[in-house]
Every structure is written in structure tokens, then in C-alpha cells.
Amino acid sequence: MSNSLRVKLVIIMILIIALLMTVVLVFLIRGVQGFYTDQFETQMRTVFSKPEFVGDLRLAAGEEDRAVAVERMNGLLLAFLGELGVDRTTRNFYILDGVTGEVLLSSNPIVSPRVEVTANILTALLGEDSFRVRTQADYMDVAVPIASHDGQANFIVYIIDNKQTVQNLNAEIFTIILRAVLIGFAIAVIISLIISKTLISPIQGMTKAAEAMADGDFSKKIPVETADEVGILAKTFNDMAAQIETMLEELQRVETLRREFVANVSHELRTPLTNIRSYAETISDNQDIPPETEEEFLRIIINQSDRMTKIVQDLLELSRYDSGASVIAPEEFSIDQAVRDVYAAIALEARKRGHVLNLELEWKLPHIKGDRAKIEQVLMNIISNAIKYTPDGGTIAIYSGTSDGCVWVKIEDTGVGIPPEDLLHVFDRFYRVDKARSRESGGTGLGLSIAKEIVSRHGGDITIESKPGTGTSVTVKLPIEWSVES
Image 1 (tube, rainbow, N blue to C red):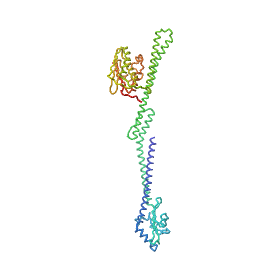
Image 2: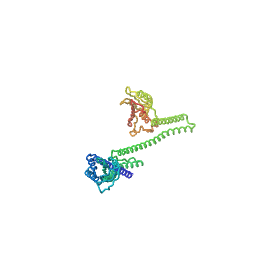
Image 3: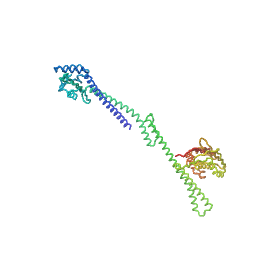
């Protein structure tokens, strides 16, 4: 690839230089031709506009002897050779018969005495001055009729330039341009190699990195050596590789979680299903089972069915949160009254376990906006966990207050606490600190996950602090001013 790009770049540079030099050559040649043509016409008009010069020519043309007239006119023209630019090599003058156009005298006898009858000569034969110069022609000429004062004798002074000077200059220009082109080609090759190295090196790096990415290796980075567009492209490529690597890691993590989730769900459902089947088969296979035993087995079957129903309901609720289909029904309500209602609902369960349940609320808690039922569900879940994991006769305290535009509710217990290594995972789905006790109490391992989702949907936060053997503190913070996200 690199060789192909270098060759293409060299060819492009050479073509650009060749095109530029061609354009310059054409403009220079046309410019030189135009300059000499304009200069020739201006020079001729200047000389033949001098009254004394033209008057002397007309006096000379009035000589009775035709030969003498031609000689006198020749003498006058020789006197003005410099002003006329006649060098007798590339530019000559002729004296022509004003009627027939026959050459009577030439400034250079070596030159053929015959001249081609041009458009300017034909105009002069009609008695008019003709200074018209054709740029495309390979010569420049003027023809000026000279008549005696009495009109008896007519001559034409004809000056022609074969453009040899222009051609020589154009040839020299062409040679210079050709040399410049050759030097330019050499410079183009050198510059293209330098540019190609600057441009292609990052591209080669990107190609190698892309090939590595195709093989699953996202660790290769392209060195960013410049701040130009190529450097920005290299940096963008590195950022893209990092994002893809992060995305793949996240996908792998999600896949791992998905597998764990499926395994957890299967395990959680298999246990109650196994129990239900075992007790149901026992009842079915034993016709003489005592009524009290049968009633106990049926109670266990119902409890296990309720447990499965609870698991399915929790899974459906989490699924709705994941898909964004869960509906939040916001209303303005008293957080003070909501906490008191939860306290009243849970007080009986706490007393059954011999717990001391304390309630301490800040004076005049503000009303907040949110889904009251779901907020109460969060608080109920947290307090229920505190009751479950606090040994009988423990203390559970509920506090509430305001700070930084938020309302907070804190639940503290004197329970068994949570080990530090488990604190990082308490909000993970199906995660249990004490798995055996959780299942015995009917827990699904989804309660805190659901609580986290509900609080997050309300723009709040939930945090847990705990020490093993000392107790646990759970704080729920909710914004006072909150609006449902669209």
C-alpha cells in the first residue's frame, strides 16, 4: 500500500509541476509575442506620425527622375534606421511602386527583391496607411503610401519583420522552462517522498492497528506526532479503539452477568419447584397420611408457590426498569407521613422479634414529588431487611431530615452487619450476604436491586455503611424538587 501511495503522490506532484510549467510557458510565449507586436506597431506609428519625416519623403517622391526619387527616399529611411528598428537581418524596409507593388529598392540587397503581397500592401495600394499586425502570422509588417505633392508619383514604404527575434526569445524561454521542469521533477520526487513519509507512516500505523483490531487486539496505539488533521485522525482512531475495547469489555461483563442471572434465576426457581413437587408427590403417594401432616405439607407448597410468585414479580419489575417501561406516577406527598405509615406497617413484625423500633423525624419535613407507593416500597424493603438480619431483641432506628435540597431517610440497626467484601455487591441481583438465612426468610436477593432502581429513577441515591457484628446503616436521599424524565 505504501509503495502505491508514494508512486501516486510522486506522479501527482510531477503532473502538477508539468501543468504549471506548461501554463507558464504558454503565457510567457503569448506575452512576448504580444509585447513585440504592440511595440512594433507603436514604433511604426510613432515614426510615420512625424510630419517632417513624412514631408521629406513626399518631397523626395516628387523628383522628376524616378531613380533619383527612390534614392532620396532610401537616404531618408537609412537616416531613420534606428528609430525604425531596421537591422537589415530580421527587419528590413522596401520601397515599392505605388501602383504595381513592384519592389524598387530594399534595405538589404542580399534579400530577395520580391515580397509577398500582404493585406497591408493591398491597403496601401488603395492609398491608405496600414499598420494592422496579425499576432498569429509569422511576420509583422506596415505599409505606408507616399505620394508627391502634385500626386503624380506614388510609392509605398513597406517595413517587414520576420519575427526571428521573437522566435529566438521564445526558444530561449522554452529551454529555460524545460530546465525548470526537469529541476521541478527532481524537487517533486524529493518533496513527495518527504510528504509521503509524513502522511503514510500514520496510515501504515492505522492499517496495522486495524488489522490487530480485526484479530481482537485493541491494545495497539498509533503515536500522535503532529497536531494537524493526520494527528487528529490518529488520536481519533486511538479513542475509537479504546471505546471499542471498553464496549467489548462491557459486553463481556454483561454477558457474564446474563449467564449468572440465568443461572441464579434457574436456581431460585428450581428450589421451590423441587420442594413443591416433593411434597405434592408425598401427599399423592400416601393415602393414609395424617391430616395434620398433610395440612403442613400443603402450607409448605403454598409458601413455596408464593416465593416463586415473588421471584417472578420482582424479575418482571426489574425487566420493566431495564426496558424503561416502568411507569412512575408522580404526586406531591408528605415524606413525613409516608415514613410514619411505613413505621406503623412494620411495627408489628418488629415486636414479634422483640426489637425496639425507634422513629425520629425532623420538624416539618417538606413535601416532595414522586411515586409515593414506590418510595414506601423502598423503605419497607430496607426496614424488613433490618428486622430479618438483626438478632431478636435488637434495636432499629428510623431517622429523617433535609440537607442540600434533598430529603434523607436513614435506617440503622444493631444486626450482624455486612463484611467489606460484600458491600460492593449488595445491589447486585440475586446477591446474598447470608444465602442460607436469606432463603429461609423467603428473600429473593432482588429487593435492594429494585430499591436502587426506584431511587435512581427519582433522581436520588442510596448508600450503605456497615461493620460486621456492629450493625448496618442505609441512607436514602431524594431531591425535594424533581421532575419525571421524558
